[in-house]
Image (cartoon, rainbow, N blue to C red; front, side, top):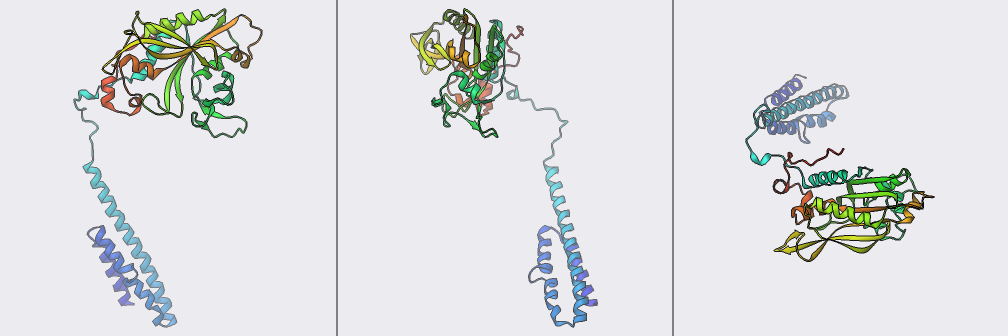
Length: 358
């Protein structure tokens, strides 16, 4: 028994005198490993009588537990000491003044700046700001816009569909901000003069497309609204936004399921050395889509008994407007988080737009 007590005390001393975690691991293996001292003593219990085996076995198991606890405690102490050492080296005094770095001046992202400009112009032209959810149901995003069941826009490779618990209802990340128009029409409160900027989503990615982008759409509905109203409105907006009274616009007949007649609008430009100069030259650049609200859209929104009611709608990509106005060649750079790019193309926080119309 004295030999056993001496063995246990010697083992505990070795643990306590370990200089670091590597030495401690060697001590653990020496004492408790497969060929360790305590492990061997447990294996040798079969040599003793039943009475001695019972007493020695109890003492050895107590010693084993005690050693394990001592080793774990010592290991935790080493780990805490190592952590404190690392933290002391990595310490940053938060009370120190900031470094004088002119590159850290904040800049407003071109998308935010362009949205503010559009909001200011359309607001001053008499439209009311409206918002809607990014997650829409199939009816508001497709059906109510007279988009047929077999239209390519409904395919999985073009649209982000969401899993949901409603078997008869498909949820999507909206592919345009047109659902805001539908939600407004369904209220049946006229006249309507709204615009809706916001995020939209499509399965697309290249120099001129990203999976998430921003759009702004407008809707005007009242009695006896004509295409001439739409034409004037779009021309006025473009000339104010691009700050060019000489800007020429071309309305090309087109097709959209939700408008009839429909048109795509181009602005004249000149391209030199890879740069686009708007309002000059004889080339044309597509800028937006528009048209008169399709009668089927009114029917699907349950607008009946209003023979004189008509309206126009338009939609445009905000990133595209920013690229054309400020000469940004690649849409993907908008969302790469490149601070050098933002310092180059960003705007001063003091360069604010007029939002007094609100």
